[in-house]
Amino acid sequence: MPNVIVVIGAGSIGQAIARRVSAGKKVVLADLRQENADIAAKTMSDAGFSVNTLKVDVSSRASVQALVKTATSLGDISGVIHAAGVSPSQASPETILKVDLYGTALILEEFGNVIASGGSGVVISSMSGHRLPPLSIEQNKLLATTPVEELLALPMLQLNQVKDSLHAYQLSKRGNSLRVIAEVVRWGKRGARVNTISPGIIITPLANDELNGPRGAGYKRMIEVSAAGRAGTPDEVGNVAALLMGSEGTFITGSDFLMDGGVTAAYWFGELASK
Image 1 (cartoon, rainbow, N blue to C red):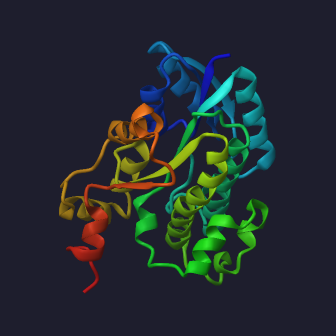
Image 2 (image 1 turned 90 degrees about the vertical axis):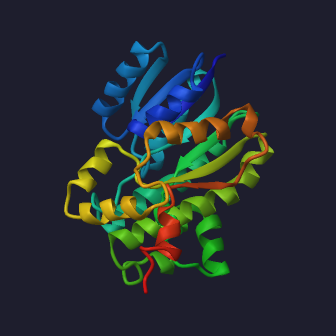
C-alpha cells in the first residue's frame, strides 16, 4: 500500500511542508473548515499530488480517531504534519489550551499508535514558547507526561494561573515542545521520529491580519530589530521540515527548531529586552 502523509491544518505552512515531502505519496489534508481543506487540495491536486480531504477538530478525540481511521485505510502513515492551531488574537485562553495544548497532545498520542517504521512527524509550534520564563523541572514533566485526558486539569493551567490569551499560547507552545520530547520515546519504539519547529513571524494570511491589526506595530517592531530584518516565508519552514522528515534527518528526533530570524534573541538580549 502507498505511504500516506497526514497534514493537519491546511494553511500556508502545512501546504508548504506537504509539497516538499509528499511526492509519490497519498496526502490526507485535514482542517477544521472543510472549505479550507478543499481549496488547499485543489491547489495540490493541480500540481500533481494525490489528495484526500477530511474535516477534523483536533480538540475532539472522536474526530482525531476518525482522521486516523481514514488515513490508515489509505496505506501506511509515513508522515504527520501538525500545523493546526489558534493564535492569541483569535481565541480565549480556554480555547487556546484546548486546541493548541490538548489538541497537539492528542494528535501525538493517536498518531503515535499508528505511525509506520521509518516514519516521522513535525509539529508546528511557535517562537512564543521561547518567550516564557523557565518552568520548574516538575512543571516541565507535568506538561510532557500528564495523560492527555488529565492535561487540562493541571493546577498550573487553571484560569486563576493563566493570565491571558498570550500566556495561554506561550504555555501551550512550550508544552508542545516538551510533549514531543516525551513522545519521542514511544514513537522511537515504532522506529519513528518526531520534532517541533518554532517559527517566528511567517507571512501567511493570519500574519498579514496581525500586521495590519491592533498589534501590528509590535509585530513590525519585532521584524525591524531582528537579526534577519524581515519576516519569513512558509517555504522556508518547509525547507526545515523537509530536512527533519527526510533521509538526511534520521538522527534528529525530540528536537525543537527555533526559526524566527533572531526575534527571540532580540527579546532576551537585544532591543526588545526589558530594561
